[in-house]
Length: 136
Image (tube, rainbow, N blue to C red; front, top):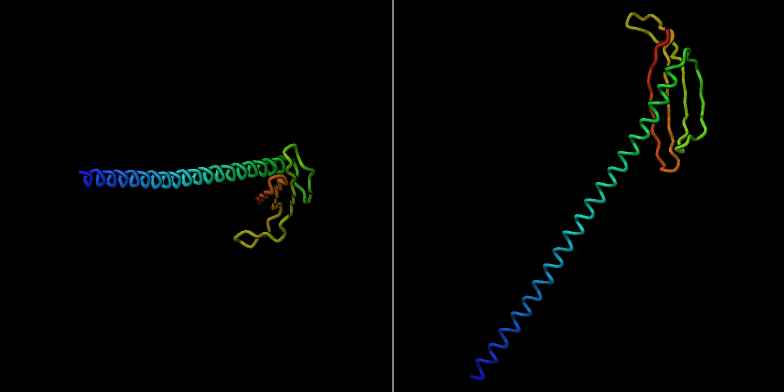
């Protein structure tokens, strides 16, 4: 009888130890899942921030291009502005394209290339754009 009681106690201790191992493994597995989820979330937030900054800079450059195009007469110039309220400064350059020819090899006057570079110092971002403009 005493043999059966000792056997039962050993069996019970093994079950407790096995349950403890199961809990530890489940906790480790759960930790890996949580860490992976947090990393994925951080990556998504980071990608969103980068995309937002790029859209912000693109909008700033497009507005500067529109300002230059809206002038009555476009002339060659190069200008670096002071930072605006968002901390962005612009390098604007307008150049006349000499010797610009059409398919019949005729020179076309009044073609300008407009280049804008926006620099957002606080975010260490830079965005550039270039467009061609025909002025009659």
